[in-house]
Length: 523
Image 1 (cartoon, helix red, strand yellow):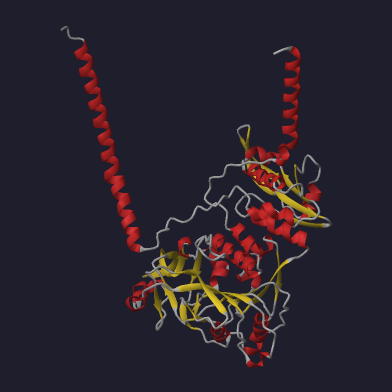
Image 2 (image 1 turned 60 degrees about the vertical axis):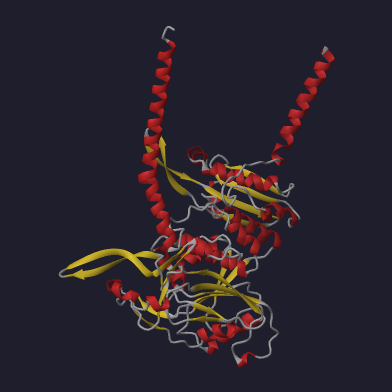
């Protein structure tokens, strides 16, 4: 190789290196081995560029102190870079430290909330105020994620907000709190916060008020004993006009303030309306061996005793009991239900129905005498043998529903979607009792998206990495066999394996020693 050839090769190498640097911002590769590809954006997010006519700008405001102290900001930034890399120039990603950019006041005015964390610096524990929030801008519109410190629902939050900004449409949901003794901001405060954080604008609707057909979705929470025909008629008209509704209802009333007294609900028309649509909510309580724990007080002579026990009326529905073929439960996280009632499905002509989730085969019912006080645990099994079997707890229906009231008139009927859950408590604050808020809120947000016909967005929300519970095996016989096998392996198999390996190593050493001695003998 002569000197000219060496110069040409050097120049070409430098050019290739420079070109690689220039296009590196548009190339992105990540090897993701998680179950649901939690660290890789989905095809829905990759194809957002097809909907974007102008440029979307995503700014990640993160404090340098937090970035240096924790790996999560780096993972968040990687996910945002992946959006930009797959957008064909339609999405631009920026990362800024609010303190260095002198934007602290502006960032807080946007709605990004400062957080306090503990840092270990020079053998001292200090408290630092940090920021980790995202601003999404498109044309003159913007959306803010106030705090982001997890990848769990980040892709869902980003893609749903980008789509709303590009389409210039606001995510909206209506809510009717049907029970007179319940208040939205207190009983359903957690759901209220999660809906807002997920980008929904909430419209509280008073029972009996007109419901506009433009409302994408509606939640009806309780109301069996309070909503009469006059108050139900607007809901029926909304469904006939193509409205989509989630009904969370109880067939049995449980008074948690009076020693868990329970009785059948006295229906004013809501249960009858649902039966007309194809779903019967029975006046019964479901009990299951897949039970959550309850802590309660009891009197023992002159002392108050606090006890914790498995409570069969509180159901811990595991992820494998969800319908994997339905968009809403294809990546089901599980659900916690409290004093739930079973469903029976009889869809009318023109309506299709799907089971969303159900109990284990070991479930049973209380239909005659409702015993819910944990102190009378022995009476919970009274109807177990005659009612044992799988019970439907959640269902979805789609189609053109027949009107439940003759006075509804000859409205032009349109296809609608319904979700029915035989329990209203699962959407309330009691979901914190066994730390079930993540599972229950995840289902409710996905239900809101599915009712709003955003099925691809529903799929995104279910892609986060899940740790799951330790009760994945629902069948008692299979669970007992798995536990027996595990015990055998740990108490017999592993010790025998260690002994065998030790004996084998010892035998090999003796054989080697004998062989070495044989070579030392004169023949």
